Image (cartoon, rainbow, N blue to C red; front, side, top):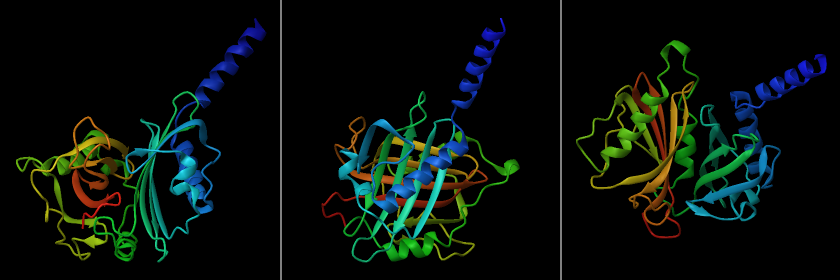
Length: 269
């Protein structure tokens, strides 16, 4: 009976340890950033079988952006415990090879190792790309932890991001614009760091932002959405521009928007 009790206890301990936590996800993003810096497309939290996409195309992880060492000048990470997923924004100002990258990672729910990595990688020639402007404005924004009593729910945060994306195709959609609110698009910034900064400028019409996948972090009021800009619903990467929009939501209102769009070697300027 004692041996059985010890066996059950050990099983319970193993089960309780095998769960997704914020600390686990923080270790994953730390590993990811180290991999970016070293140019080594492997790291301790990486699973044995990984689906890797770059700009909405599946390829070998050994042939993507992780295979070259990067000197990271700015990074910010977010962590989604319910989905066991995480997000990283990476800015590399190297004049010869500048990059702004948004990466989502997803863990396997049984091994708690990284099973999927999806990145939007932008560089010279991509939509409004200006790494100097991106670094300047991103490094001045405040994306700090929100006090528990003031946090929005996951549903509110995601809905704010979806409303922004939906209004591109339907101007009747009510978007929870904040004021101030600033959008960083490529290297173009709609604000000046002032109280009257606005995000509701230069929004086109009749454009579908589709095939969305999310990483939500309630503690920081953020949602990143990787998708196809002007794409075809249900056909991931088949049309449109590979795109990432990340949002900071405060009090149910949009505060910051960061957008990346890869032109995939095409002219889209």
